Length: 574
Image (cartoon, rainbow, N blue to C red; front, side):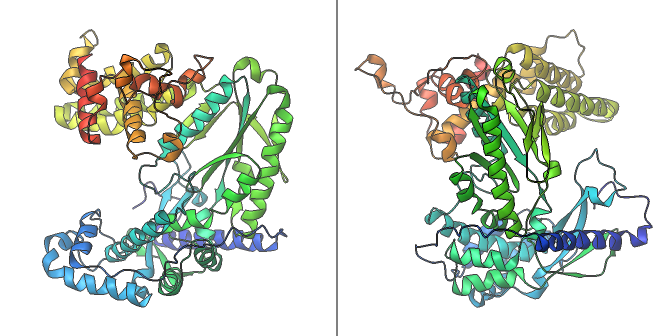
């Protein structure tokens, strides 16, 4: 159930109102796109490897393993509570296996699996809940249909990985990738450019209802041409996409079912992955323009750097790239929302003062340059000082802290600690690797939040010394949490557990001549940088600098879990 909900519409008519709105919005976008003239963009190279023609049938053991990996969430479409699948697994597994394997072998998806119950979700808590356009549709699908999708996704991913078909700069829905690794790569590039006395232009692109306007025919052609999916496997995806229906449900009141002519379902297992494959040809366009880019699902960003006196040329190159991107999107039934596209120049204050441009010119609008933008949940200002981000995190955390304080007397210490961990410490830790190298005056603002949190959990006074309280809760202080994150990411980079775009930024140290320290084969090379506020804050610099200070036995840990445990012990001992 979505909360809150509009209170200006008759509750009995609310489901139908949302259904009509969601349907009409997509139809309006599609009709608009059909009327826009566009140039045919170049076709990506055809797949030349071993095609993916059919799915491998599962054994009972295979299916049990997949099922146990799933979260047991029940949907209104489920004939029985999902927990029973776990409780009665030996009895139900053979029947479920027959359903799954029949679908895989025949290339068809049962019609009952192609109905979704849609719940309206408010996009942001700050938005007006009485405005339907502030909601997005999230599909709830039956448990067995999601199990089938997960089985298919495993075999699809195996094909994509074996043939190196995934975009290296798409960080969504992939193992070892996250919003944090994406932002770490982007800020690393920007900080290194700043260190070289350059300024960088960054554009954040926004799509309107991106998942919902995907053209099924184009997607199926792309799966075949670009990704080598044929025969029964392609038939399965065709069956998965066609004859889908959805109904909006609010408080057990359902709208009339609507047949979906386009789009991939949000809330599904396969939908988001299919969207990333659908948009992968954009890589070729962006590479042709020699513009750096990165994507996380439908969030795309472009950036490039130049000397300050070339700011107009820099923004013009970004503008030309966006024009080609917009043309490709129109051709592929996606709508770039120019009104929500953001742009920012990033560099030192002195270099930015020499830039002569104040906007990014697009074909149908002018985008003013911002002093700060919110990117994947992190506020980036134009000098990457992170001051606005820290202020935003502080406001949110103190708000949550005050709310918890009002009910503290009703909670146990353990319950309060868990509540603080989920609502406050999680925010302090989100993308905290971006804070490495900041001055202590910036980090101290976040430390004060953690101190207040510890005192609330343990019911201590402000004058009570904080270190024993943090130790009692087994909470690393904020600076140590940042160190922990950086070193954990570094370990992952060295052991194939991180994206290549991060791993490639690190290299092992090779001494120019044999030294006693040469026995340390895990020492990393520290690149030369100029600015403490730029290059020395980059992941390329911070990762090896911090890693090399760790004791060799710690760096030699054989597993990620043992490394994390030993690292935490080491940081507590300092």
